[in-house]
Amino acid sequence: MRLDTFTPGQKFETRAYRVTKDDVLRFAREFDPQYMHVNEEKAQAGRFNGIIASGIHTISITFKLWVETGVYGDDVVAGTEMNHIKFIKPVYPGDELRVYAEVTNIEAKRKNEGILTVMLRTYNQENTKVFESELSVLIKR
Image (cartoon, rainbow, N blue to C red; front, side):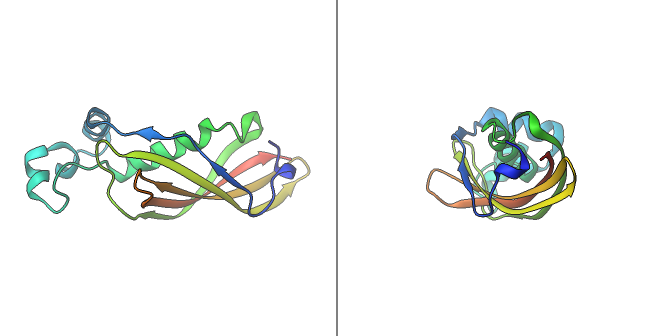
């Protein structure tokens, strides 16, 4: 969709994605090898009572689900910003995540491009918000 087809307040919903223990371990071992993500015994004794997904992993899943909706299509040029990143609740293996996106700002920049900003909110299977962030992209008009 081109910039001019979006409207403030417009809402979208993604499909659900189940986070597996293997996903959590694989991602964390490579990108965020802190104990609460990779060491089950130590994580079990800690604050979260088990391993949790890295916040960076949660961002990646959120972004994946949003992009897979195909809303931008080939009209997106590039991401420009992520703001107000909030890790609200931990994501556990077995959680099923889905994302709700709401258009919050539309700004024409050039004759053929502009900035589209959406608020992404990620929820688990209990309808508990686990993450939110504002995402801006450069998109064709």
